[in-house]
Structure formats: structure tokens, C-alpha cells
Length: 338
Ligand SMILES: [Zn+2]
Ligand SMILES: [Zn+2]
Image 1 (cartoon, rainbow, N blue to C red):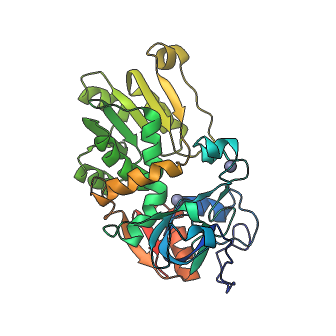
Image 2: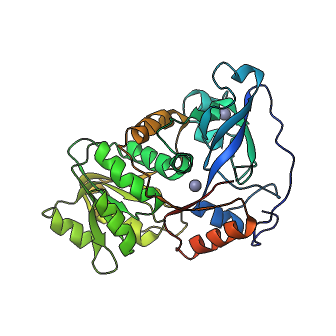
Image 3: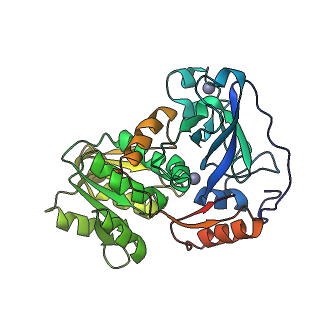
């Protein structure tokens, strides 16, 4: 990205130089994410420019710094945790590194994986099991990981019911993970037929919000009770309200979709009367990724149908994919394979 609102451009840049605690990774797959659309458009600021995008990265270790060699060797298949943090501050040392004051997101505030090589601290590189393809590994590091974190924040328990508002990249992982966390029934709310069919193929109950009021429909299908957990992955005030209104007593609505519309709540009927909770959830943690990778390796989480297209490391192909995402077209996920 060279300027706000302009198409991405291709440049030849030096291979990143790494320090002794870093690894140099040869990129094998880099996911094109909806966040990248916001970065390119300037709705989410990127600095400094020029910036190489790409926060969903899988690849092979090309070179490991001296103090990283006990764990990682050239040739190891890896995926990258995109929050590059100091590792030493209060938040990093208490396992909440997403609040590290000097943290830099890969492909947003430091050069990422829309490239042949990327350099990161070695602790950001996790071994990718051989059962998981590079393209799937890349998307696990964003959408799936963020869903996993949101479900942990929801404190969902075995036997509960859940609803997922928005079954795109995040939501399709969320419906599967909610079952794995013990939900007995998961409603998938969306307006797109193709997405609803995909969610239904993962045993979710589809609710077509283009034809039905999702709150009334979820209440009808749960005998008036509602759901214990609702995950909002759209980022609109309307769907946030729906997520809160379909809760059972003591239900938890987790807001994951990024938006800035003000949210209005009837505080008695929708919040304190039923002891509802509205919980914010942002990104995910390094410590969550080993379990997520294990679930993917075992097929408990299937992302094989999430990656619908691959493109080469070519600026016009990448811009076309970003344009399609901006119009909410182009399948679930496009991944760059350099
Ligand atoms: Zn992403
Ligand atoms: Zn830190």
C-alpha cells in the first residue's frame, strides 16, 4: 500500500533482515482478509506507508536467529501469530499480549505476508502440522482464531445453545467451534443463501434474515427460551441488537464484528432484567493457537471449504480480490500463493 484509497502496487524490496530472536519465513500462503479492504480504503489507518499487507500467513522457515534455533529449523512448516508484541511488559507476561503498548500487527503496522519473505519474532511462529494445508493454516490465524477467542470469552458450556450472526470467514469457524465447545444447537443467521448452506453443512440451523426476523425465529425454534450465547460477527448495530434480544436469561452476547455505530439497549428488558451480559472480544491470544491448530489437525474444525480461491503474488489479482470483498462477493476466502 503506497497511498490511502489507491490500489496496492508491486515493488521489489530487500529480503527482511532478522535478529537473533527472529525467524525469516518463506511465504507459502497469505490470506486476503476483509480487514485489508478497510486498510486500503483508509477506514482503518495503516502506518507507516508504504506497507506490505498480509496478517494471515503460513510458510516455511528459511532462516532462524541464533537463539531461535533450538525450536525452529529451516524447512519447518509454520503459521504466524499476527500480533507482534514485546514479550516482556505487564500484558505480555500475564498472557494478554493483545494489550501490549508496543504491539504491532503484522501487515498493518509492520510488513506482512503479501510477499515472498516475512521476518517475525520466533515466538510468533507455530509449527503447522502436516495434516493442515498452508492455505488453510493461513486463514486459521485470523478468522478461526478470533472465533475461538470469542467463544472462550462467552464462557459457553456443554448443553447450551448458541447463535452466530454473520457466517462469513469468522462465522463458519464459530459454528463448528461452538459445537466443539459443547453447544447442543447452533443457529446461523445470515442473508446470503450460499453462506447459510455452508453453515447448515456444518450442522448449524440456518436462519435467513432476508426473509425472517431472526429474533422471532430463534425464539420460535427454542420454545420461547432464546440462546445462551450469541456471537455478533457483522459489526452493525442492528445485528448487535438482534444478538442481545435473542438471549435466554443469563445469556451472553459477544460483539466481534467491527463497527462504530452507537448501540442502543433497553436496559431493563434487555440487560439487567435477564442478567444478560454484553461482552467485547478483539483478536485472539498466542496461547490459544496450539489448541486451535490441534482441533484443525483432528478435523474437529474443518476449513477446507473456506478457501475458495487462490491467486498469485500479483498486484492486479490482489486488488481484484480486495474489490470483490469490498462488494461482499468473491466466495469466502481468497489466499495468495506466491
Ligand atoms: Zn484477517
Ligand atoms: Zn508487551
